Length: 276
Image 1: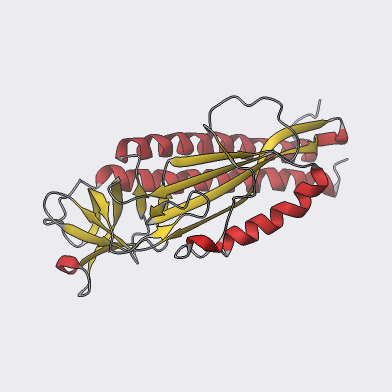
Image 2: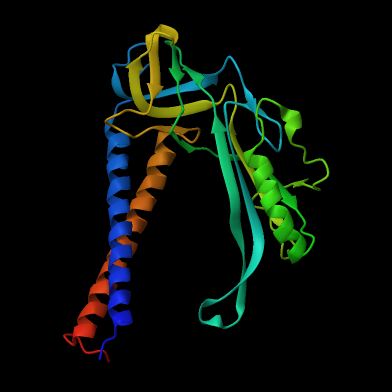
């Protein structure tokens, strides 16, 4: 006889599947918007949803917290090598887990051969390649547990206009390639990644163009009130579309599997499908 826990499991599988499936449709809609909007030159773009390609210019810059790189956008990410118990309590597994991340941005200009537009990046989705990576050897599990919250808090409170407000001089950070094979990895070791957009970087920007008397040529690109798609990327439109296609495919397949599993478990609980 099926118990309450059995029905809750069926409901959980179905709800999770429905959420993932819905996420896939949301990403699919975004993919269609990006694919269907033609590329515009800045001087001739119409008001509304636009796609432009241009290089970055800026009147002011901020500095990234680790490498102190002058930029208009940065994101930091920390991954730590941790050990956790496997499902069922049998044995344990070791893997890299993200333990903290953060990002900041300021308005900047996108310029092509025809003109310049102000980009207001609030609430934008940034798709940016990592530019710097560092490795830090841990000092044991207890030291790691004590240190990581302080590091994350310092990074979140970092003043990007004052590069001296945070120093990693004593942190023993070693520059590394994110794809290099690492030897003798220990619990508590960390990887630090920085992503940023610098002046001169070529960007793909899709957002909503609107009139703004304070912007060059009275145009600003920002997140729209009706169309929320707002992407800023240094990877190009083709790469963004390819990544979205993979995400859509994964969400629809996994969502479908979870939904079917939930329905099957529910029917087994009712005795409609034999349980074995």
